[in-house]
Amino acid sequence: MVPVAPARSTRLARYPSLQGQRVFITGGGTGIGAAMVEAFAEQGAQVAFVDFAERESRALVEKVAAAGHARPWFGHCDVRDVAALQQALAEALASVGDFFTLINNVARDDRHTLESVTPEYWEERMAVNQRPAFFAIQALVPGMRRLGGGSIINFGSTGWQTKGSAFPCYSIAKASVNGLTRGLAGSLGPDRIRVNTISPGWVMTERQISLWLNEEGEKEIKRNQCLPDKLYATDVARMALFLASDDGAMCTAQEFKVDAGWA
Image (cartoon, rainbow, N blue to C red):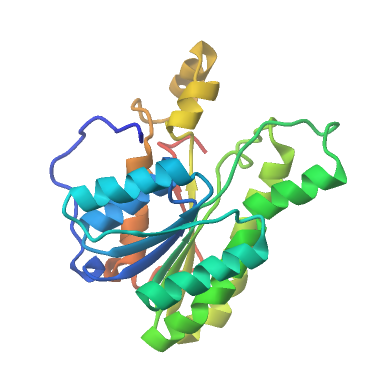
């Protein structure tokens, strides 16, 4: 279940260029990823996604289809296994076709300390939070070239920018996302492939609410956000819609923060 933001407006944008567009999302089964699967499907896009959470992902597929939208393609995948990710991407390409948009969303912000990190834990954190984005881009860029362009959206975080101290490995991985974005935007630009970063603030996903939203967290939100409302996954999904659409055609090599003014 994706927590839903209070209705702030009934006049949200529709993007005709997303109708029929093929979109691939990593970590699409829950949280922000699930909100983006639904948001793109509502725009008429054909969505494919991978996730390790099989039960939640299959329920999401049925929910989207029951709402009358194109049934998403889902692949059960542990993205820490590069070969498994590459296989899932190949299967999605064979089933759905070349993707115009890739959203590198998968991540886990598990808490840990500097002292507790072993070489094995370091490798596992990078295998979740850093490595999959590169290999997903590598697999899908040839199709974007065949299509004459594309949009790659990498997910960063404002956590490291606000000096969050509870997840040093996550901070390192997410700080590198801007390097990935800017490092590829120049080389892929001549092919009209745009590369951008979305950095969310503290998004009220089910995981965040259940694990970390306590009384002190409520105070942190009020103290640090410019806007008084809580941030939800659907708020972040709207930025992804814009960057994938033709409306974002001249946006590349940029970081777009959706954090209610926290960072």
